[in-house]
Image 1 (cartoon, rainbow, N blue to C red):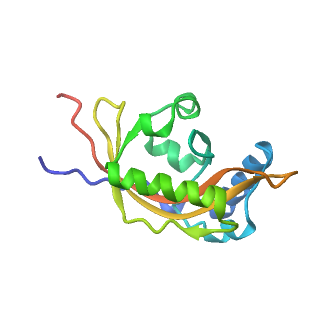
Image 2: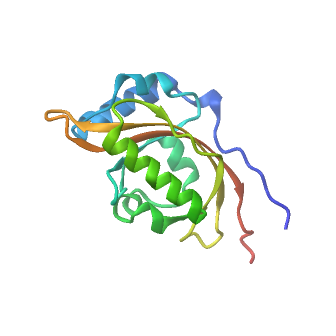
Image 3: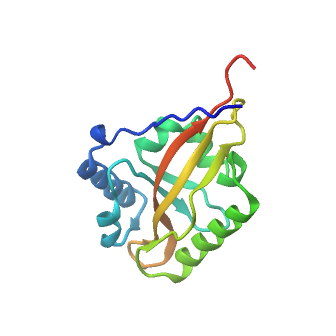
Length: 168
């Protein structure tokens, strides 16, 4: 079957400064501190997400870019662990979880993800939407008052590359 390649992000309509402001406001609402250097790493078109620490890895925030391409509701994203919503190869998933855990509990600043681009499939979507994931930067998030490590924040470039036709 031939793949359908669709670019779902529009850099022209991406308000970079607005996205940074929304992230800062979301972190404040969540009682989190994000290293200032992280904001300098955000680029036009980036999906920005905050997750709770492993092993839960529940999404606490995502910008509108994520919502434009994801078929899940915000409620599903907040209540269902990411590994149940999405499928990726076991090897990639292991590397990603290991890296997220390392950054969440051991790093003190922004670092590159250091993972190859890979495919991600919406497991619960009937048409198995498939995306190419380019994970860019990751940083720990701290509790504002105690500097306790509470989660991690990430930037990602994502493209929808395949979706089964509706008539199957």
